[in-house]
Amino acid sequence: MTARRTARSADCVEEAEETVKELRTALKNAGITLPTLRLDAASVAREVPRPLIELGRVSVETAARIAAALR
Image 1 (spheres, rainbow, N blue to C red):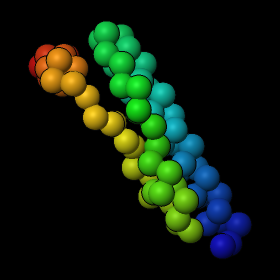
Image 2: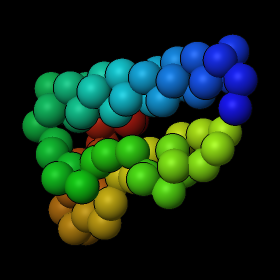
Image 3: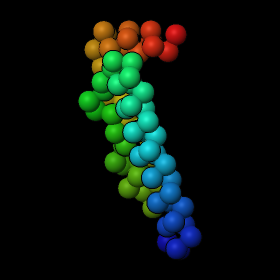
Image 4: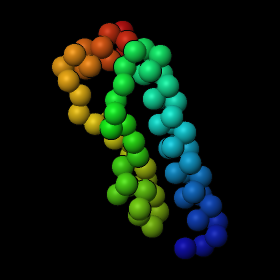
């Protein structure tokens, strides 16, 4: 992998990590916790990462609270 591609890949993963932090904070401010909120390890382990964010499974109550917060 070239140095340029490596730098872009690192930037891509850093941006995804920052997005996870922002989402976690926004959800916390709405009184919602998703304990499994994280980057999908397989999506960042590729030669050219394409990060996906895992939201995890939630209870019906949590899903309803997320829906209400989005409305």
